[in-house]
Image (cartoon, rainbow over all chains, first blue to last red; front, top):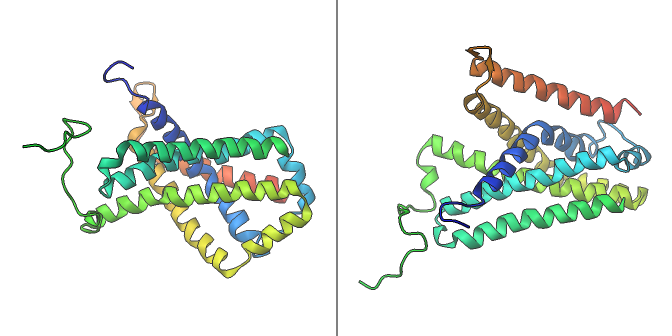
Length: 115
Length: 136
């Protein structure tokens, strides 16, 4: 790579896209699966959920919903750690954070194609 | 002087204690905003596990829901929902500043852009609830 050129814009774009997904879509899903369903406020049958997650369009939706916010986390968490004073570990932190997001993406694909 | 050469010369890092962000309310809000990403990540991983359990069958899914019913999980999700909503609020606020929307030669006021985001968010959330709960 020539001096001054980095892949930072790629990570920033994924951070931004993941931030949009997290802002618009995560709250309602957290409300449903974290509170409304466990507390019995609403009921959704397993058959209905299985039919939904088996649908190709829903799988694509779930991929976007799960994978993109991981890059949003990776970017922010990396800089939280740096801001807390771990400047010396800049590179290992970046590899750890973005690497975790990539592992999460692979896991998401694996779970979704097996259904 | 035989100090180790810094990895990235030219970048100056002021030496601050790890608690620097407690000094001002604005810094605390900044840190809270950044920390929302941790709750976002934990939840999407949880969601992946839930999807996996749905795929494994009714019993696996019922066991998963039983775990989510534990008081610890409920308390965690109340806290997580608060953080995730804080992300939504701060993200929309930032969008209003960053995203310049023009109609013809005129710039749409940032407050209107933010309001548009909220409307789209409410509509999307209601649509997802409707799709999942009503349209069976």
